[in-house]
Length: 282
Image (cartoon, rainbow, N blue to C red; front, side, top):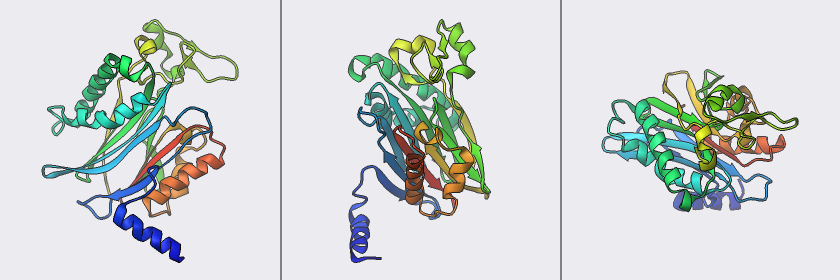
């Protein structure tokens, strides 16, 4: 290691990462559980529209790992709002500790209603979301709307914990709400010819044809669970679940793993914003 690298590591230890697009942390409850994140802006000429959350938080005698990817479209105000408010709304649900899955569902609905009410301030854009809450290092509550994705590695095998909400798979529900799905040559399916996902926060002009109901799953962290990847579709457009797991299975540092995945997506010619969180359980 060079003198410059040693100085940089000493600086990080005292001040934390100097790069706002890259960082890491660890659980106080279990020294084996760590997280890291990395973001890369895509080649589009608009501002970065991906936002994330990655932190451990003490709540009375409990520890919560809070992790999320928010991939905005038509502006960055909605994903920025979600970053600041969604987890607070979830934890403010009265039955969060007794029935966290239903608490997450209600909080998603409440948050979406607030975003629509604030459309004059936040604009008419929207955002996908994938969130993961790790309760006391034992139970994982994963929820998503849209095509940001959560993938768990169990004994080296990829297990998808979210559902990609695509217009073609939910066209009947969209049609029943009065909308339609376009399938133009050379383009992806879109709700009303505009949005490439069938569920999202916000999007006031399309909301009557969209859903904001999340897919929610509960996963107990067993001995075989190695790590979870949360990432925006900028990664998943160019990499399969198993390819992502295989790419970082031997990278023990969670931030290095997240950075490796974003760099791999860029090398595979992904032009979208790419954001990635990796949480290691071993």
